[in-house]
Image (cartoon, rainbow, N blue to C red):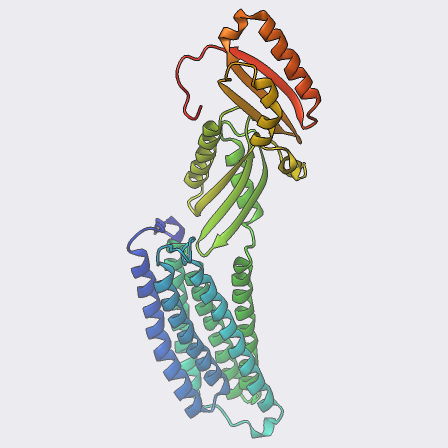
Length: 396
């Protein structure tokens, strides 16, 4: 017999994903409607405050189920201009609201039961009907938990998994209620109200946990250390990546987003650097199915080790004005390449190879460039290259 973990997971883009989420939630709605009615009515008839409290718990489940349906419907909407990353965090917001509802419901139950415990003499005896109803609710909620967890794990939906564990907490609370009712039937009149208080605390705790986990995602808490280390290794192992000096991750419902700064050889072309970035992005997406997007920033040096001194260096137009007096007396250069490294500029001037036929011109050019270099502190070096142009270069 296969376990849940042996079953294939459903892709995020599977068209049946939304239908499975809705079907699972409607099953939960049907179960909770029946349980709410049965527990509240039986609790009132049988004088069981704990059973009524459990019924209110089931009622809160109904509200949560409708929140899940709302979130599942809207979270599948594609990205748009106002929401470039999509609408997946509607699920997260629903989980936060679910937790808040649970916490409020639990607090109300604790207050009500606590008030009744102050006067034990007025507590009425509980009828056996309450015990049978509590046992029925216990088995129904445990079955609902197993079904919803099965679907939630296949869909990798934290919202459904959270709702499943909510159902498990309901089963645990029904067990406490059954024990409390049993104690009342045995003569311990306070047991039913004590059970109601315990159920209230269980509900509050579960609500706080759900809201806290959702809040962590809403404030962009990163992935686990193990997940980050795995992504880091994939990036470092990408051909062409020299080092990785900044890696940021965050969750968005059932998916993850990754931002990375990688260092490449500063002498390669922009297009090759872009190709390395795309290769890095693809490797991370292929190796980590839960990652939906990777933004790779290409650096030529670790910009965390330096201040923004490169931002204060002269740009191409300023350097060309500085070199203009020298270039004015020379044939038009094929190109000028600038490297901004470690707070200085390294310049490479590519001149026509035909200049080599005039040694005097070459000597004067090299002397003028040397003087230009000494008169421009931002320039670390200035190299002259002579080459024969074999074909036109775009942008030259």
